[in-house]
Amino acid sequence: MELRTLGKTGVKVSPLGFGIMRLPMKNGGRATNDTTIEDVDMEQSIAMVREAIDNGVNYLDTAYNYLNGKSEEITARILEDGYRDKVHLATKSPSWLWREAGDFDRILAEQLERLKTDRIEFYLLHSINGGTWKRAKRLGILDDIQHAKADGRIKYMGFSFHDDYELFEEILDAAPWDFVQIQLNYLDTDYQAGLKGLREAAKRGLGVIVMEPLRGGYLVNAPTSAQEVFDAAPIKRSNVEWGLDWLWNLPEVSVVLSGMSNLEQTRQNVALANKAHAGMLGDEDLAVIARAKQAFDECAAIPCTGCNYCVEYCPNHIVIPNNFTAYNLNFIYNDLQMARDNYANEVGNFGRRAEDCISCGLCEEHCPQHIKISEWMPKVHELLG
Image 1: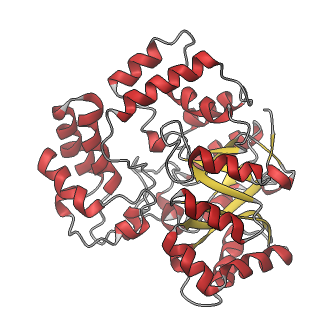
Image 2: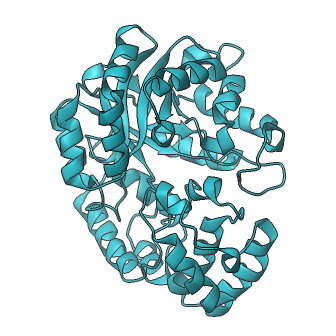
């Protein structure tokens, strides 16, 4: 696997990073705000991540809140038996939990204990937007993270970003960052930081970690019009391969994160990463992706990535992304009956449906895509219920 230099840090990282956020559950479902470690298929999870590490993946990404707050403990178990020293570990400070001075250090101490480690190589301020940025400045979080770097609790400091480009540039100017994490894929070139943010960060010598490379799976199950574009391409690639290769083609991209959820998916992504290098796509390949993007744009509905942040704050325990997936099926495949069947069966089997939404808005405060969830949920049930 061809390693990449992560900006001015000089650290050599794998082009594929393993996101410890969508691990397999014993019941076959997704993590919810009731998930415990016992619900996670630990045997398969350990096998997946360690096989990825054994085959060259050396960047692991977790966070305080992933898997209902269990991800960091699970990561520590995965990295037993000598695997901790084989990887660069990344985790994040939960910006929504900063309430008073001292919260940053208290949370970081808890994370070090959860991860059973004395240092974190890559530490991020998590989910920074206009509101959390104001909170960070008010509470002195920028001083806190620089002190943590100075005393060795963390090695490199960064932030994950979910807002517009103007704020992104303001934050870049505010501290001596080592790296950033942004949402990017061939649909989101002008969304949030976008390609402009990628290039600006790289120009400043920062490593760039990419999240949502497949838009939460949306790029995998392409609408018919986009699939026809890919099927007609002279060089055959899977939809996953088109998405990942587009990112790996960009020299400014350091690591592409994937929240892999089974062993087969892990093996497929590792195999693709073994072929990854900057400049790997030709003009004809890029033209195919441009045509597919146009087809996707014409089918757009709810831009949910399935990150599940909203689920953790829903008082009615609604798995909101599953409802949005059902709704989007109608627009992707122009098949209302398929969407209604999914809503009745798949959504009903794994959680409460859109009709149970009480429009409290708690979920919206934590949605990185800024989706007006309380406005969409009645529309979902009106169409599918």
